[in-house]
Amino acid sequence: MGLFKHTVMPAKAGAPSTRCAASRRTAFWVPSFAGMTVLFVAAFAQAAAPLSREAQVAAVIARYANQPPQLRALLQTMPKGGDLHNHLDGSVYAEDFLKWASEDAFCVARTTRALTPPPCTADQVSATGLAERDPVFYQATIDALSMRNWSPGSGTGEWSGHDHTFATFGRFIPVGSRHLGDMLAATRLIAAADHVNYIEQMTDPGAAFSPELFADSIPFNANDFEKSYAAIAPKLPALVAAARAEYDAAEAKMRAQLRCSAVALPPACAVKVHYLYYVVRTLPPKLVFAQMALGYALTLADQRFVGMNFVAPEDDAVALRDFKLHMQMFASFHAKYPRVRLALHAGELTLGLVPRAELGFHIRDSVEIAGANRIGHGYAIEFENDLPSLLREMAQKKVAVEINLTSNQITAGIPVVENPMALYRQAGVPVTLSADDEGVFRIDLTHEYVRAVTEQKLGYRDLKELARNGLEYSFVPGDSLWIGGNQAKINLACAGNVPGAKQPSALCAAFLARSEKAMMQWDFEADIAEYENAVLAGPFARH
Image 1 (cartoon, helix red, strand yellow):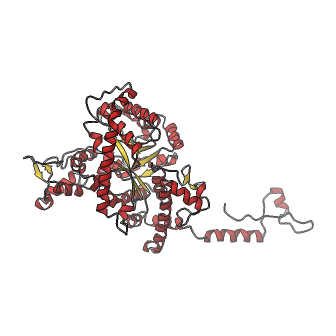
Image 2 (image 1 turned 120 degrees about the vertical axis):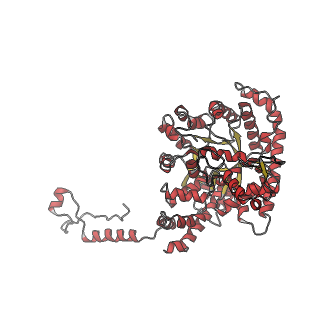
Image 3 (image 1 turned 30 degrees about the vertical axis):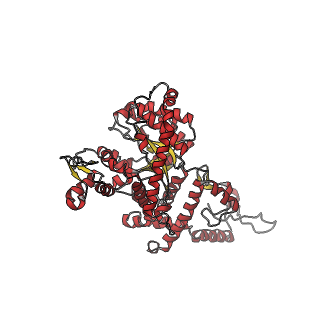
């Protein structure tokens, strides 16, 4: 068990033996004094061996596991890899939406606090200068656009966290859709302050809701996807071009705001971002199919878009009714375009929210029929039919699950002790940690890392694994730095190199240059090493 082995040589003829007569009969070994000394010295040496840098940091984190303020300070600067479940509009804080609404002379509904374009009616007030003109109404509007101060029936009257969470989007999207570049800048600033290396943001171009895409003249046949696709295909090139132009302009505005052309690059400009095109699952089947068609076309045409996702309440009556049809649609597109990766909100359900019969198959069908590479939320896993086989399948296929601790608790009322993170991890299913809608929930990713320690009882090594998983199971193009997702086995091209080293070997450097994903992972290893050194040199390690 880690002690040096003491080899006992056979005794020479006539020499004193280390075995006595009794020991021969019982086959017990009585070690010599010298042997005992070697064992003692070896054990002492092992006990006195210095801990690894990682182990030392783990000990510091563990020391403050029950002291959230200190823990927050420690984890704030920890590099957090990739945030893979990040709704662009839901990640913007209400104050930003109200600032833009004020600039655009938008209107605020007196009852619902929804933001809409002018002119304002008698049931609305102007958003221009609202913070100064009516601070009480302004603060109440922040509550309506987020989960701040929410309680059942308060404010805008929703009786569940689920209903209020989803209601916020309809209130701020009208102004957010006019400020794509501003939203890109705002969320990068949050990520930089949170030391997030990479974001995979769910976002849609305006073309996803254009009249051309939803035209009545485009036929749809739920029993013939090929024919339906052929009818809509001629519309796609122009819509893809419009979408790309929209993001070109938005990213240019974002870079100008953040001053990304400056000699000293601001931290927010260093945050890497790709996009996931999303489909709204509560639309009629024809429109869901049309959005899918555009999403796949855009993802194939624009490297900024790396995959697809599904949004809107999974428990919605239309979403439940059409679930099987939606899975078949995704299966059809997957067969046509297997390179496009898929992350689906699935199993965002719980007992009481929907009939029990709806809880047994959503995650399995998302994996087996739609071909999902990742699952968002997935807290209905415990209700899935033949749970052991599904967990084995997800572990074998490396289908990662995006865990959102705060969102799961507030939106679905999932108690801390019932969060399935431990269930997935024990089954070998990869898990990532994300903030979901950090603007709506008034949190950041560090907040979720603190909860992972204080509530899920994870240690520093666990957090480090989650951060690495956020890059490993991202849809960033290129081969991984790790073999088969095993973070102890480096890609053969970089064998013999210290991950994150400033000067990798020529072979390793060539490999990194070919793989955007591996380069991000390499940079993360450099960042995490720097973080660990800083922790050990800082005040928390000295107390």
